[in-house]
Length: 331
Ligand SMILES: [Zn+2]
Image (cartoon, rainbow, N blue to C red):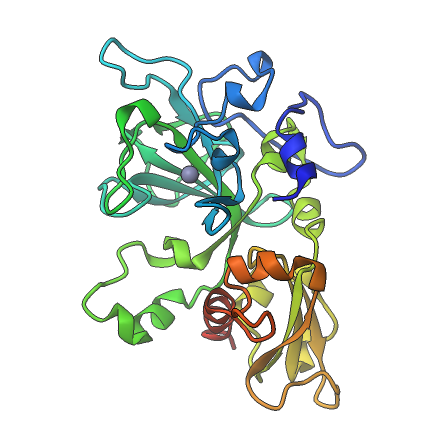
C-alpha cells in the first residue's frame, strides 16, 4: 500500500468532492462518523493487531495476502460481547444477493447493486450475524436502510473470534455476466458448485472503499478512473466482452467494429479503461491475449498480487483468471 493511501485513513471528511455529479453515501455501520479521530477509531485489525491490516490492499501476511475491502469495528456490544451495530445500505440501489448461510469466507453476507450511480457498482457487507429478514433480491433499497446486524460469521480456515467482530465492506465492479459458465468449465471446480452465482468473490473486483466512505457525496466513476494503470493487456476477440456492455463509461473507440481490446488494469486487477482495436491494429496479439506493458515501478506489488508471475513479465494466476472470466462471455 502506498504511504498516501495510509495517510488518507486519518482524513475522514464530512463533505463532497466538488464540482462533479455525485452519489450520496452513508456510513455502513452504527458508528457515528463524526466521532472518528484516527484510523484506530473505526478499523478492526487482524490478530496481528496492526491497524493497516484492516485496510484495502496487500496488507496481510507481510504483504503476501490481499484484502479486498475494509474491516469496520463494532461501536457497541451487549453484555456477552456480541456487537450491536446495525449495518446500513451505503447508497441507493437494489438488493442483488442474500447469503443467509455462513458457508464461505464471507459468512452471512449481502450484496447490493447500484445501477444509477455514475458507474453501476456493487457494495458487499460480510460476516453479518443476521440479515434483515424483509430484504428480497431485486427489491429497491434506499441509502441508510438497515440490511443486517454486525457479526463474525465465516466458514473455512479463517474463523473470526467474537472479539474481532467486524463489517467487511467492499465496493467494486463485476467482471462478467457469464461467470457461471466460466466457473462450471474449470476442472478444479468439479464437485464444488458455485453457491453464489454472479456474486461469487472471483467475479467481484473491488477497489479501495476509503475514497468512497470518506465523503458524503462521491462520483464513483471518477474514483474508478482515478486508479493508476499498473499494466495493460491486449486481447483478440470477435465478441464484445460482457464488461464492455456493463460499463460503457469505461470504453473508448468503436466497440461495434472491434477485433480486440487494449485494456488498462489497476494493480489489484480491475480493468479500468478499454480501447477498441480494429482489425489492422498493430497492438492486436497473435494469440487470444497477452500482457502488453507493465509499470516497472509496481513490479513487486504486481508479483505479490499474482497479476504477474514470479519473473515479473508473464501473466500471473490472478490476471489470467480475470482475463479468462472477462473473455468468457460476450456477443
Ligand atoms: Zn475484511
